[in-house]
Image (cartoon, rainbow, N blue to C red; front, side):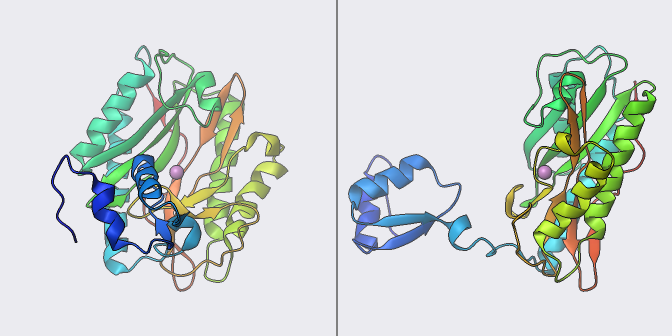
Length: 286
Ligand code: CO
């Protein structure tokens, strides 16, 4: 550790601590300004992203970490139970998003990282966050919310419907729920990350919606809400007890609506354990 007074060039203080031609790993979330400062102070050094160099460093959680992730998942479940009592129709997505953030904090989160509210056609864009659209009767609404509780992450997605859904809307929700269950059922020691993706994707493909599941099935979670390992075709990383990640398939029908269902799971010695409540039938909200 070196003392550093505010206002002094921090890179001039740091540079003497480093090998002038060394190769270093930096945090994936390091500020670009810090990395650029180091590179300028030590032009012969080179850098790699820690997540790339040691992708599995944080992937396996110990019992204390699992307890914290379980608590974060329970708090997110409580927030979801509560948000179903809120009015959806006639309010903007950003209003419901603010409610969700408030609920996550009320149930113990110290930090809210995202509260996605994608109503109607906005739900068909998996990158939508929350906008000015006023939610209407008959809308599907994708909710995806999470943050940190005691330093560990939650990340939950549920899709609700304002009023009675159509047969097709219910069917699409059922397919995603079945895909989510199939992804979870594929989790066991020795299976690989891509096995989880394949299991979830197979259900959606067999139902005829394969072209509309347009993202990976899951991502690791721990002291951040998104980190390795990733549940995606081509990722042959074996699953190890203590790994924690999301299983979150979706179907996105452009211009119409989307459905995503996400739970956090952990690999156990003989299978899988969910760190938040299993998604049930699609909730009807008002
Ligand atoms: Co997620």
